[in-house]
Length: 131
Image 1 (cartoon, rainbow, N blue to C red):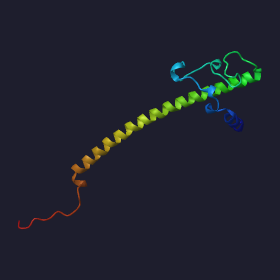
Image 2: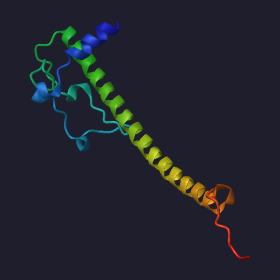
Image 3: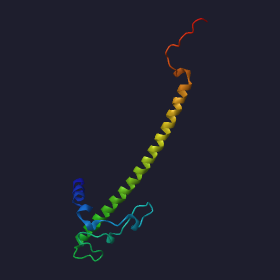
Image 4: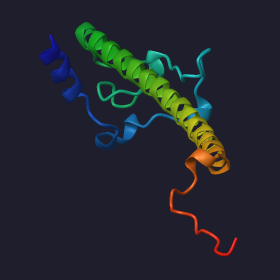
């Protein structure tokens, strides 16, 4: 099954290959509760229908089913990418917070060590003569 899925993925044309496959800007698509853009199947032009939307053209029922399946798969992958991008942003933010906390703790430890006689230099102190 993995091989079949891989074949399906590899057979999907890239947006660069089909100028009519470019989706509208984010601002013009509705968003769901998670903030992911959602579109209806009929609102996306297809190579099957030569860019015409909604008329169905000369598609067979199998082609309609394949088109719907591919569009659903693309939308699912777009949503997954959106979710992963949001996760990456939150991890980056958390990483910055932790780096900042580490710097503060490092400075605190340095200050404690410099104030403690245990961590002072071990070089011999010069003895005073004549006392």
